Image (cartoon, rainbow over all chains, first blue to last red):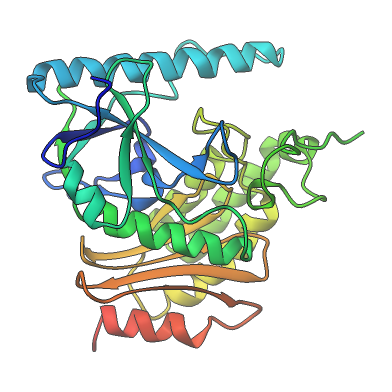
Length: 164
Length: 161
């Protein structure tokens, strides 16, 4: 799926950290906007991006499997970096675990003033762009703009818990 | 000897202040952690234990696996002071962390009514609030000792008396 992202395409964000969600009410977890905040793009560090997946045509079970794969890969990368630094990696305690899916349509992201574009590999990977650049204002002004963008974005997402 | 963090090639936004060093993060000994937990008793144990845990989970760089900056001890203490003032008058928020190493407080009523404040060592705090999809605000204001009036105003609007 490397063509343009259509407005009606379903887009998934995988939640891998406990702190991405608030489970005070277990029946209705709250997605935290902080989990959507952008990281500097590798190609242009002044611009931000957030990682998502295109899930058109996938069953919920397949999306869940993809979420587990993403969590496994993130854990492996994290482990590799720990070992590179010569530190001990605790195999009994995972840092990244698939906890659920945030689902919306591409148009919801665009209505929030952002955009979603293909970014393969891996297959079906895409990124959310259009974040306020990491330049031109104070750190906190930039961060407040990102919080605003993430807050609006999160209000469009529906949460689906990970199946154990 | 201290080691500086390896964020020199990325924007200033993601750069750690010069006095935050890798060694100061890793030297945060168990005794200090115990002190932090002891302090929770004075603030309402459940609330602040969660706050402390949020800090402890994110005090090493790359805590998100994507290169996030660590939350410094100075940020923790500054945020704690802010939290103490707010929870005297309003419900406890949810806690979070930004990739830039700031602690966040999220007062959530529903997905379109919430206030998030982000705080670290910077003299300013960042905030964003939403009161319905057509009323979204954001900005950065100076926080020294007193919670900025705009934050009180937004909390008051979220939780009318």
